[in-house]
Every structure is written in structure tokens, then in C-alpha cells.
Amino acid sequence: MNFDNTNKYNKLALGILFDAMGYVSLIFPPFDIVWAPASAYLMTKLYKGKTGKIAAAISFIEEALPFLDVIPTFSLMWLYTYVFKTKAQETIINVE
Image (cartoon, rainbow, N blue to C red; front, top):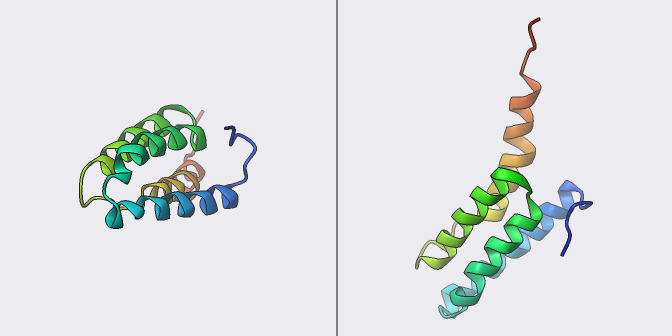
């Protein structure tokens, strides 16, 4: 699975879909056994580098622990990547 050429709005749609899949375990708890590692894998494929690996670890822990499935990890990572991190990079001023 390769998400390298996926634009940011498609990543948002996929993130919302993956977050919704995480809610299945509220109805069927054994789904977490399969979904926790799958969500971590998908997170590393959607977001590359160190931030993707950290988000994958957080996603795995969040999905594996009971009652934390309501946290929209994929959507929060999208916000971090395309809203908060982008604004922080825009405000950097190089002084030479």
C-alpha cells in the first residue's frame, strides 16, 4: 500500500474512515486484536518519517487499550501535519 502521492484531502478522508473503523471495537471488542496493529501499519504508510512512527506507536497503544477508541488518532495526526506543523514552519525567520 502506497500513499506517497495522496493529496492532503484524500488523507483526511482516509483518516476519518480509519477512525470510524476504530469505533467498531466499541460494539465488537475482539476487533481490537486485528485493528491495533493494522492501524499502526496504516499510520506509518500515511505519514512518513519520525512523526509517522511516533503516531503509529500512539495509534497502536490507543487502539489496544480498552475505552480509548474514541480518540480520533488519524484525524489528529492530519491536523498536526497539515495545520499546526505548517503554520509553525511558516513563522520561522532565517537571520543571516
